Image (cartoon, rainbow, N blue to C red):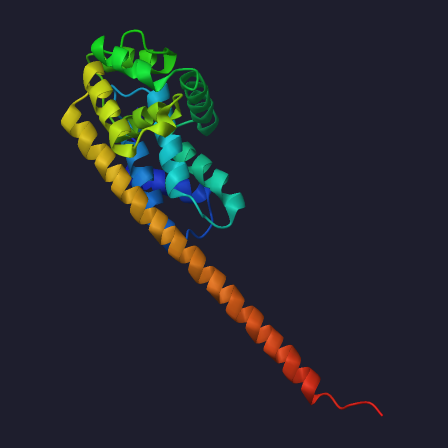
Length: 234
Protein backbone atom coordinates (compact mmCIF):
# COMPACT_ATOMS: atom_id res chain seq x y z
CA UNK A 1 0.00 0.00 0.00
CA UNK A 2 1.39 3.41 -0.97
CA UNK A 3 1.87 6.09 1.67
CA UNK A 4 -0.90 8.74 1.93
CA UNK A 5 -0.31 11.86 -0.12
CA UNK A 6 0.99 14.75 1.98
CA UNK A 7 0.24 18.47 1.70
CA UNK A 8 3.69 18.88 0.15
CA UNK A 9 2.78 16.25 -2.46
CA UNK A 10 -0.41 18.15 -3.31
CA UNK A 11 1.52 21.40 -3.60
CA UNK A 12 4.03 19.82 -5.97
CA UNK A 13 1.20 18.38 -8.05
CA UNK A 14 -0.47 21.79 -8.15
CA UNK A 15 2.64 23.62 -9.34
CA UNK A 16 3.20 20.95 -11.97
CA UNK A 17 -0.36 21.46 -13.22
CA UNK A 18 -0.16 25.26 -12.98
CA UNK A 19 3.42 26.36 -13.79
CA UNK A 20 2.65 30.08 -13.71
CA UNK A 21 3.53 32.91 -11.35
CA UNK A 22 0.64 33.75 -9.00
CA UNK A 23 0.28 37.41 -8.02
CA UNK A 24 0.89 38.30 -4.35
CA UNK A 25 -2.76 39.26 -3.84
CA UNK A 26 -3.92 35.72 -4.65
CA UNK A 27 -1.18 33.51 -3.18
CA UNK A 28 -2.76 33.20 0.25
CA UNK A 29 -6.17 32.29 -1.22
CA UNK A 30 -4.61 29.63 -3.43
CA UNK A 31 -2.50 28.16 -0.62
CA UNK A 32 -5.37 28.04 1.89
CA UNK A 33 -7.80 26.51 -0.60
CA UNK A 34 -5.22 23.95 -1.72
CA UNK A 35 -4.53 22.84 1.86
CA UNK A 36 -8.25 22.74 2.70
CA UNK A 37 -9.09 20.61 -0.34
CA UNK A 38 -6.16 18.30 0.40
CA UNK A 39 -7.34 17.73 3.97
CA UNK A 40 -10.94 17.16 2.88
CA UNK A 41 -9.93 14.65 0.23
CA UNK A 42 -8.35 12.53 2.98
CA UNK A 43 -11.33 12.60 5.36
CA UNK A 44 -13.14 9.27 5.33
CA UNK A 45 -16.50 10.86 6.18
CA UNK A 46 -16.30 13.59 3.58
CA UNK A 47 -18.37 13.51 0.38
CA UNK A 48 -18.33 16.06 -2.43
CA UNK A 49 -22.07 16.80 -2.40
CA UNK A 50 -23.84 19.75 -4.08
CA UNK A 51 -23.54 21.92 -0.95
CA UNK A 52 -19.75 21.52 -0.97
CA UNK A 53 -19.57 21.97 -4.75
CA UNK A 54 -21.46 25.27 -4.62
CA UNK A 55 -19.24 26.42 -1.76
CA UNK A 56 -15.89 25.64 -3.35
CA UNK A 57 -16.87 27.15 -6.71
CA UNK A 58 -18.24 30.27 -5.00
CA UNK A 59 -15.18 30.73 -2.78
CA UNK A 60 -12.84 30.40 -5.74
CA UNK A 61 -14.84 32.76 -7.96
CA UNK A 62 -15.23 35.34 -5.21
CA UNK A 63 -11.58 35.41 -4.19
CA UNK A 64 -10.19 35.06 -7.72
CA UNK A 65 -12.08 38.12 -8.95
CA UNK A 66 -9.74 40.36 -10.89
CA UNK A 67 -7.14 37.60 -11.37
CA UNK A 68 -4.81 38.37 -14.28
CA UNK A 69 -4.39 37.08 -16.85
CA UNK A 70 -8.07 36.16 -16.94
CA UNK A 71 -7.31 33.19 -19.21
CA UNK A 72 -5.41 31.57 -16.32
CA UNK A 73 -8.37 31.66 -13.93
CA UNK A 74 -10.06 28.42 -15.01
CA UNK A 75 -6.77 26.49 -15.34
CA UNK A 76 -5.96 27.65 -11.80
CA UNK A 77 -9.20 26.16 -10.47
CA UNK A 78 -8.64 22.96 -12.42
CA UNK A 79 -5.10 22.63 -11.05
CA UNK A 80 -6.32 23.11 -7.47
CA UNK A 81 -8.87 20.34 -7.96
CA UNK A 82 -6.56 17.97 -9.84
CA UNK A 83 -3.81 18.27 -7.22
CA UNK A 84 -6.24 17.27 -4.47
CA UNK A 85 -8.06 14.47 -6.33
CA UNK A 86 -11.22 16.42 -7.10
CA UNK A 87 -12.84 16.70 -10.54
CA UNK A 88 -13.24 20.38 -11.45
CA UNK A 89 -15.78 19.69 -14.21
CA UNK A 90 -17.88 17.51 -11.90
CA UNK A 91 -17.83 20.12 -9.13
CA UNK A 92 -18.95 22.84 -11.55
CA UNK A 93 -21.72 20.56 -12.85
CA UNK A 94 -22.95 19.82 -9.33
CA UNK A 95 -22.81 23.52 -8.48
CA UNK A 96 -24.64 24.65 -11.63
CA UNK A 97 -27.39 22.06 -11.17
CA UNK A 98 -27.86 22.99 -7.51
CA UNK A 99 -28.05 26.72 -8.24
CA UNK A 100 -30.49 26.10 -11.07
CA UNK A 101 -32.74 24.00 -8.82
CA UNK A 102 -32.62 26.64 -6.10
CA UNK A 103 -33.59 29.35 -8.57
CA UNK A 104 -37.02 27.72 -8.83
CA UNK A 105 -37.64 28.19 -5.09
CA UNK A 106 -38.89 31.24 -3.21
CA UNK A 107 -36.93 32.46 -0.23
CA UNK A 108 -40.12 32.58 1.85
CA UNK A 109 -40.32 28.77 1.77
CA UNK A 110 -37.01 28.52 3.67
CA UNK A 111 -38.96 29.02 6.92
CA UNK A 112 -40.85 25.83 6.18
CA UNK A 113 -37.62 23.89 5.65
CA UNK A 114 -36.30 25.22 8.96
CA UNK A 115 -39.44 24.08 10.77
CA UNK A 116 -39.16 20.56 9.31
CA UNK A 117 -35.43 20.11 9.85
CA UNK A 118 -34.70 20.44 6.15
CA UNK A 119 -37.36 17.96 5.01
CA UNK A 120 -39.18 19.14 1.90
CA UNK A 121 -36.19 21.13 0.67
CA UNK A 122 -35.17 20.79 -3.01
CA UNK A 123 -32.72 18.12 -4.15
CA UNK A 124 -29.43 19.99 -3.50
CA UNK A 125 -30.34 20.50 0.15
CA UNK A 126 -32.02 17.11 0.46
CA UNK A 127 -28.81 15.47 -0.74
CA UNK A 128 -26.79 17.50 1.76
CA UNK A 129 -29.26 16.59 4.54
CA UNK A 130 -28.72 12.90 3.79
CA UNK A 131 -24.94 13.35 4.07
CA UNK A 132 -25.18 15.38 7.29
CA UNK A 133 -27.15 12.59 8.93
CA UNK A 134 -24.42 10.03 8.20
CA UNK A 135 -22.57 8.86 11.28
CA UNK A 136 -19.21 9.60 9.65
CA UNK A 137 -20.20 13.06 8.34
CA UNK A 138 -17.34 15.55 8.11
CA UNK A 139 -18.16 19.28 8.06
CA UNK A 140 -16.35 21.88 5.95
CA UNK A 141 -16.72 25.66 6.05
CA UNK A 142 -17.22 25.42 2.28
CA UNK A 143 -20.59 23.83 3.04
CA UNK A 144 -21.60 26.91 5.02
CA UNK A 145 -20.67 29.12 2.05
CA UNK A 146 -22.55 26.76 -0.25
CA UNK A 147 -25.68 26.96 1.90
CA UNK A 148 -25.62 30.76 1.94
CA UNK A 149 -24.93 30.92 -1.81
CA UNK A 150 -27.89 28.65 -2.54
CA UNK A 151 -30.21 30.82 -0.43
CA UNK A 152 -28.95 33.91 -2.26
CA UNK A 153 -30.07 32.27 -5.51
CA UNK A 154 -33.68 31.78 -4.38
CA UNK A 155 -36.40 34.02 -5.78
CA UNK A 156 -36.86 37.10 -3.61
CA UNK A 157 -33.46 36.79 -1.93
CA UNK A 158 -32.26 40.04 -3.54
CA UNK A 159 -34.92 41.91 -1.59
CA UNK A 160 -33.38 40.81 1.72
CA UNK A 161 -30.30 42.31 3.33
CA UNK A 162 -27.14 40.27 3.95
CA UNK A 163 -27.68 39.79 7.73
CA UNK A 164 -31.19 38.40 7.15
CA UNK A 165 -29.95 35.90 4.57
CA UNK A 166 -27.12 34.83 6.86
CA UNK A 167 -29.68 34.36 9.64
CA UNK A 168 -31.72 32.09 7.34
CA UNK A 169 -28.57 30.12 6.53
CA UNK A 170 -27.73 29.78 10.25
CA UNK A 171 -31.22 28.58 11.16
CA UNK A 172 -31.57 26.21 8.21
CA UNK A 173 -28.10 24.77 8.74
CA UNK A 174 -28.85 24.20 12.43
CA UNK A 175 -32.18 22.58 11.56
CA UNK A 176 -30.35 20.24 9.17
CA UNK A 177 -27.94 19.21 11.92
CA UNK A 178 -25.00 21.59 11.55
CA UNK A 179 -23.60 23.52 14.51
CA UNK A 180 -25.02 27.05 14.47
CA UNK A 181 -22.00 28.57 16.23
CA UNK A 182 -19.67 27.03 13.65
CA UNK A 183 -21.86 28.29 10.80
CA UNK A 184 -21.94 31.77 12.30
CA UNK A 185 -18.16 31.85 12.69
CA UNK A 186 -17.49 30.52 9.18
CA UNK A 187 -19.99 32.79 7.41
CA UNK A 188 -18.85 35.87 9.35
CA UNK A 189 -15.22 35.12 8.50
CA UNK A 190 -16.14 34.54 4.86
CA UNK A 191 -18.01 37.86 4.63
CA UNK A 192 -15.18 39.75 6.32
CA UNK A 193 -12.46 38.23 4.14
CA UNK A 194 -14.54 38.78 1.03
CA UNK A 195 -14.91 42.47 1.86
CA UNK A 196 -11.16 42.81 2.43
CA UNK A 197 -10.40 41.02 -0.82
CA UNK A 198 -12.87 43.18 -2.73
CA UNK A 199 -11.23 46.32 -1.40
CA UNK A 200 -7.76 44.99 -2.28
CA UNK A 201 -8.85 44.12 -5.83
CA UNK A 202 -10.39 47.57 -6.30
CA UNK A 203 -7.20 49.21 -5.05
CA UNK A 204 -5.12 47.05 -7.38
CA UNK A 205 -7.32 47.91 -10.37
CA UNK A 206 -7.20 51.63 -9.52
CA UNK A 207 -3.41 51.45 -9.23
CA UNK A 208 -3.10 49.69 -12.59
CA UNK A 209 -5.44 52.20 -14.23
CA UNK A 210 -3.43 55.11 -12.80
CA UNK A 211 -0.21 53.53 -14.10
CA UNK A 212 -1.73 53.15 -17.57
CA UNK A 213 -2.80 56.78 -17.58
CA UNK A 214 0.70 57.83 -16.48
CA UNK A 215 2.32 55.85 -19.29
CA UNK A 216 -0.14 57.27 -21.81
CA UNK A 217 0.66 60.81 -20.68
CA UNK A 218 4.38 60.09 -20.92
CA UNK A 219 3.89 58.73 -24.42
CA UNK A 220 1.90 61.79 -25.48
CA UNK A 221 4.55 64.09 -23.99
CA UNK A 222 7.33 62.23 -25.81
CA UNK A 223 5.49 62.45 -29.12
CA UNK A 224 4.85 66.15 -28.61
CA UNK A 225 8.50 66.81 -27.71
CA UNK A 226 9.69 64.88 -30.75
CA UNK A 227 7.38 66.85 -33.00
CA UNK A 228 8.62 70.17 -31.61
CA UNK A 229 12.26 69.10 -31.99
CA UNK A 230 11.85 67.98 -35.59
CA UNK A 231 13.21 70.54 -38.13
CA UNK A 232 10.53 72.38 -40.01
CA UNK A 233 10.40 71.89 -43.76
CA UNK A 234 11.13 74.72 -46.19
